[in-house]
Amino acid sequence: MQQREKETSEKHAAGEKTPEDYMGQVLQLARRGEGRVSPNPMVGCVVVKEGKVISTGYHEQYGGFHAERNALLNCPEDTAGAELYVNLEPCCHYGKTPPCTEIIIEKKIRKVYVGCLDSNPKVAGKGIEILREHGIEVETGILEKECRALNEIFFYYIEKKLPFVAMKYAMTLDGKIACESGDSKWVTGAKARGYVQCLRNRYRGIMAGIGTVLADDPMLNCRMENGRDPVRILCDARLRMPLDSQIVKSAHQIETIVAWNPKSAEEWRKQPAGQGQTETLEETKRELEKQNVILLEIPMEKGKKGSGQLDLSILLQKLAERGIDSILLEGGGTLNASALTKGLVQRVYAFVAPKLVAGAGAKSPVEGTGILQMKDAVMLQHTEFSRYGEDLCITGRIGGETCSPES
Image 1: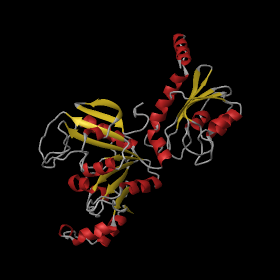
Image 2: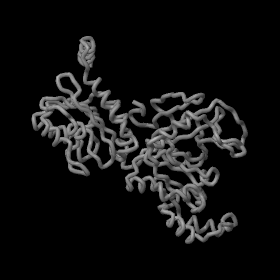
Image 3: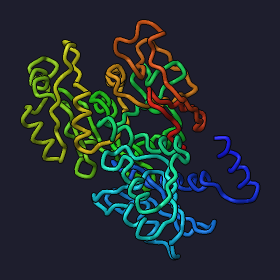
Image 4: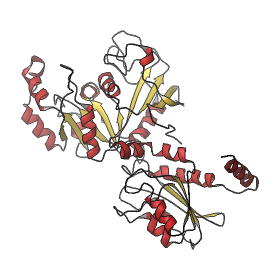
């Protein structure tokens, strides 16, 4: 490490760029693919020859060429003897595109600098091995922590076979997400709400409970310029989804999944609370499917009689099978508590507004039965603080090796 720091200092003193400098540029390029490449990782590439950047590229969209191939195909100069910088190990298998190792060899790259290895079993060190077998020098671990942080979603999904879940909520300084009357527009200001749109673009899916739909009739879409709408996932065990809601009306334009339970739906309709439902269960199902809503049958939680909660662990497994690698959880206190207590949340975004609303009955962001002793509280690691107008955002990981989603 000391030798590396010495070499870096010497190069900077001589006005030269270091591998870390080029990898920093790679990371900036990689982030341009945010929201477009899921469930693939974000990858950037820089090609350098004789101290000069001769080409750059990044993975632009899912199914398109990878960063290395984009950079090398668009390079206007001879790449023989050049160095290539990439934040993730080059792939070595055929998928939707040819392997990147092939074009690196074909273009006679002399040396490859890699940020971190790929956890995908189809790669996992094999890409580097192939390059070395063809006489190409490979150096790994360049800004490794930052490279892993950039693709925390990809690494979790590929290693755990589950979506990466980020719980997001906005609360007042006294911990309320709405007034006692139920009014919640708006807890935070425009700048904080604007950043939430960036999060909706970043995460592949967005999850909420039926309570949120009934109370606010939200769209749950992405309203940033050039943003991508997340897949909307609604937890609605009793299938109470209003057919005239904004979500149902827009399901032909935005992929929408409703997780429900047939037994709970039937039983609810037999109770006084559900007898005001104008449609039968079969009619509701038929109308939702007609509007392009995907109905996903999920069992209820076991061991919690009367909890009324879908088994979120099974729901996440089914969503992973559909290629949904990440979820922004924008639920109410009950749904948030269920996900948190089952250990399904990996990151938290807590927006705090400098206002007080009071009220013993006002809703809080995480409810449930709660934790009995402070020593058992769920702790965030690697916390970061950002300010958006007058509001504060606290983010951190629950477990995991790294943070820095903005790195």
